[in-house]
Structure formats: structure tokens, C-alpha cells
Image 1 (cartoon, one colour):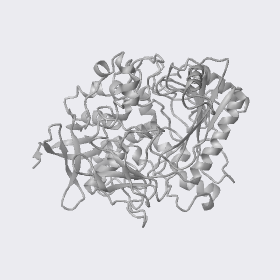
Image 2 (cartoon, rainbow, N blue to C red):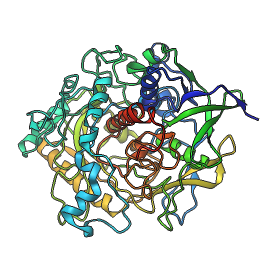
Image 3 (cartoon, rainbow, N blue to C red):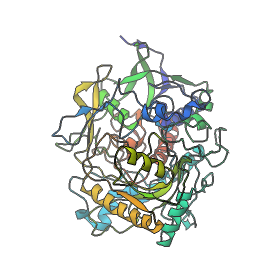
Image 4 (cartoon, rainbow, N blue to C red):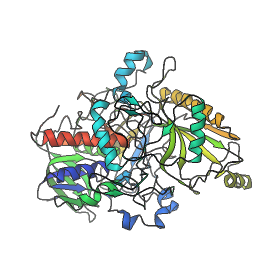
Length: 586
């Protein structure tokens, strides 16, 4: 029997990027807010101190900051004809666990999705017609425009101190920035990071081919910066330990640097760690959430009543909790009905690695997002007529920090072990860099999330089952984009090149990106979306779901900047509309 606790105004389920912002803003209005986090407390001073924070074996190989799969994992299959099996080791993606979530170990790249990304379906059909899209593709418009989200993008960038260079200020194209980005109302809060040698070579080659390279926007702060909450984010020292690691310098925008120090002093906020929410409890009519049930580290069960429940955990966890709680109708791919679990998507990365005999890049140095990119082949920035695919991605080169256990590139044809492999690994460790392509991924009827009928977690609850594979659209797109990157690479004149487009069946084993999307998608139609434009559940009005699960399909950018904008979009709706008059907002 669960112990029933005193009611509060708001519960956030998950204390990461979205949960900390929402809690700080709502607690500051006088509301009593409880943040429930199944992982442990982490802060910069005690947990991310040198030299231990640079332990590659601990953080990269043993996944110290990631989800504990011994207690909860997912099952995976490529299609519905296969039997899904549990993911026993983290591989393709790395959900975080603990206070701060995945925003502790993220690489820092902070993009705004293109205006086209929010109207993918309508814009594609208008320009190319229905034949450009496969019958199985379930892509849809978001129900919100870039223009509506622009002020929220801006606020998130200024909260996290993002470093970059504007390319489109109020409709005016600015040299040195990204000319393809949506119009922005302000310059970035911080200037770009320094330019790595590899980035300079890439930029020179790209410019010679008529492209317009620009610095990648990143939350690795280029200088000491104070945000609106009065929190100082330090200046990056280019140590090369961003992705997979926390920042010992406090120089990466994260909950720990931007929000938590002030949130934890707020008397209206209470944080409960090592507590796992197992269910959202609904009233008898299934129209309103009344409480959440959670289990603490001692195995005790509690019920926390609340007026407003915010799902602010990772994509996969938000979807699973809705399915376990009966919030929204589960998606059925056979009939293409229902919504929860619909439109799961990923991304389509590829690369071209350049090797040199006479150049040294000090690959061990770098920062998250330190790079120069081009955007000519992202979204619908180029004519797709006759290409038999839609979407694209950005192409970049930079230095994010090569680590000796994980990063040992050698030219194709090198033996995979033995003395020749050792010589090549040592020779080329500092004599290579990669041109990387991050491609989009559309949503399809056969790609979805549901509850596994066989496997269960440590609490006896069904695991989340992922059914996913890329389609011809993504394979053709990856070939085309990778060939464009290879043309730039040839202009740099390396001695050798590895060209690696993304082909074949998707595998969940090697790391690719933690850019999972869908499952709790937003939209204007309750028949094809889980939440409305304000991220409010269509079915249960006092439940809001915030995260990359809201994306109806995935674009060619990293998702965090857009997740930040959606957080502030939901926050504004809650503060200015919902709290004044609780009920359906759309």
C-alpha cells in the first residue's frame, strides 16, 4: 500500500534540462514544486572534479552518467515480424540518469531547427507533390511555426550562454553566420569558439567550392557569462572532454551551471532523488491526473498528489510512462490509429575521415561543438527534384577531443589487429580528422514504441519495445550527402580517405547519437498527435509532456536547442493561460 503524501501544486518527473527550467520558473511564482528523479544528485564541485572526471574508462566505456540497464532497459527489433530482445549494453544512444539527465554529458551543439522542419509535410507536398513521399511515411507538421518559437529559442540560448554567430538577424543576412537559418531577433549571447586547424582546412575548401561555412553554435561558452538567473558559466578551456563527460570547469551550459544553483535555494522547490515514478494516477473518468506513484531507494511506495504533472524525463521514459498509465491511446501500426508511441524516429549520421602524412591536428584538444559547418544541404535548402528523397543534414569538421581508448581511426585496408594496425593507429592518431554529416530521419508507420509483452523491469512493469529501421529515403539521402562531403574532403587533399555513408539495416549496437525523437508527438490534430502546440495532453489536460518526443519526425540538427525552445513555449502557456484557467488550451 502506497503512503499518500501531502498534495503539492506541481510534480516534474525527471530533473534534467526541461524539468529544471520549468521547476525554477513555476516555483518562482509561488507554486509548490516537487522534482522526482530516479538517479542520484550530481554537482560540479564534488562529482566532476579533476582528475577523475577525465576517466575515459569510467565515463565512456562503463557509462557512469548513463541509464542503469540492469534495472530498466528497452527491447528492440527492426520490424514487427521479428522478436524484440532486451538491450543489455548501451550502444546506439545514451540516455542519462541522475540530476541533470543527458544535459550533463551532452556535446553542447545548440541548433534551431529550420523553419522548413516545422512544416515538413505541407512544404514538401507543395513543392514536390505526393510522389516525393513514400506511402508508409507518416511525417506531419508540428502545429507550431518557427516564428512562434523564435523568442523561446532566443531565451534558451541566453539562459545557457550559447556561443555562435548569427547569419540571419531580423531577415538581414550577416556574413560569417549561417545564411540558411531562420530569422533571429538577437545575436548569440557569446561569440564563437576558436577555430581548430581541421575546421580552417574544411572552411577553406568549402569556400573554394562556393559554400558558406560558419561556426557551429554550442553551449560550450567561449567566455565567462552570467545568465538571467545570475548564474555564471565559465569559459571553455578546450580540454576535449565534453561529450560523454560532465564539465569540470563549469563551462558547458547545463542544469548544473545554468539553473540548479538558484533552483535548489528556492523554498518552494523540493528535490527527491533515487525515486522512480511507476505510474500517473487518473480520476475515475480518465480525464484528469490526480497523483503519481513512485518507489524510493528503500523500496517504499509513495503516492504524491499534484494539480499539475509535467513529464520531463527522456524521450523513451516519457512514452513508456504514458503507456503504463493509460494517458492517451496507444499507437497501433496495423490500423494506423492511436497516438502514444507513434512516429518514433532517430537520425542518419555518416562521415568522411581524412588522413595526412604531413599535418598534425592535436586531436586530443577540442570542445563540444567546436567546428565549422555548411548548411547548403540541410532541410529543403536545395532542390530535391529527381533525388528520390527528402530532407538533408549539416556537414561539419572540427575538433571535439579524441580519446585514445575510444578513437583510433586508421585508413581502410589496414589490418584490424597486430603490429601493422598498431603502427597505423599511432601514426594517424594526430594526423586525421573527420568531416561528419548528421542527416535527418523521417517517420514511418512501421517505426514505433509500445510495451513489450514479454520482458519486464525491476518493478515487474513491461519494458518499452522499440521497432525501428531506416528506409530507402534515408539511405539515398546518406549516400548523396556523404558524396558531397567527400568532394570537400578531396579539395583538402588528404593522402587517404575513408568514406562511410549510412547503409543497411539499423543496428542498436555502435554509438551513433542520443537523438531519439517521437512517441509523444505534438500537432494540431488529436488523431495524429499526443499533445497540442502547448505540449498539453489532448486526453488529460493537467499533464504536459516536454522533450524531443514531441518531434513528429527528426531534422538534420541536434535536438537540444529545439527542446529548449519547446520548454519555454510550454512554460509560457502554463503561466499565462493554464494557471489562470485550468483546462484544455487547444
